[in-house]
Image 1 (cartoon, rainbow, N blue to C red):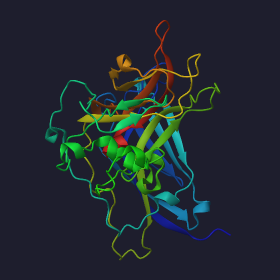
Image 2 (cartoon, rainbow, N blue to C red):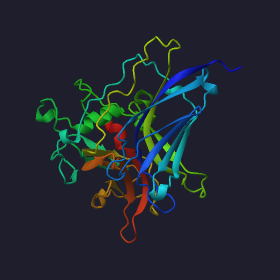
Image 3 (tube, rainbow, N blue to C red):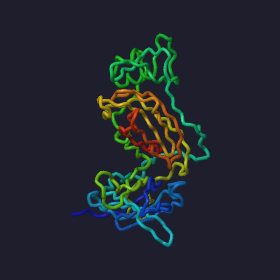
Image 4 (tube, helix red, strand yellow):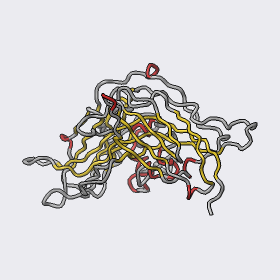
Length: 367
């Protein structure tokens, strides 16, 4: 038997829409959001120009809905994205169904996370030029062991916050790195000197429980559109909704004050220019691309319309390359939020072949 239902106050953080694909051969330009739950619905404002700013002007929506006590019997939250087109046409261009509400149930009396108010005008301007840094020590004391058994000088040497050492005791960034990975034979006397180490994760930060999927501010919901027609890809994913929910019961007694609202302090919604530093340290277990069972990998990095191609510095004949490089470029969030890191196999006579790639959501890390 289903328990009695309660009146819940559902607050919706409608932050913005990302990577919306075209619908019926026309770009989505003026979308709005429709949220349904338990027979109730609420609609957002219309994003006037998706390319200039894909965030909603009014970020917080409210809905009063009756829900059963058990999460098992709760109705889903249905998110629909509607494109407001000429002549009154309003097609649904993407939607998402959230079947479990347990994640979003909260105690409204707990202190809400505070996000400092920032504005685009307050952001310091960053350099316009893309930068590639490869710093070599002239006489390195610690070598890097490569896949073929040969040694190579350490590639990165960070100068910041280094303790004062005599030249014969010189310790570089790689010492700290190898001390952190447990490769004591490569870190010299770093650990004996009592210096701090790095925390290195074996998987994406989104998969680390301590970081909560990088969703402490908002979640990323994949929007779909019907059934996939091609099994080789996933064409049903047509965009992303950035947002979150806070759901909590309202008091039965009307004389009791309503619980405090959530999402009351939010970051600036406007575009923000950011400086991105990408540290490419090494790669593991690459797919062989050459007849000798090896490949000649190099890095290509892109965000928005900017890209850095490091083809000239490919590493020959290895499946375990050590790159040791820092790439620096600028982007404007949230429009250019996806950082793509690709490895290619260098070929002298034919077209370079892609080894693999990964995409990092910079906006999640920024927020």
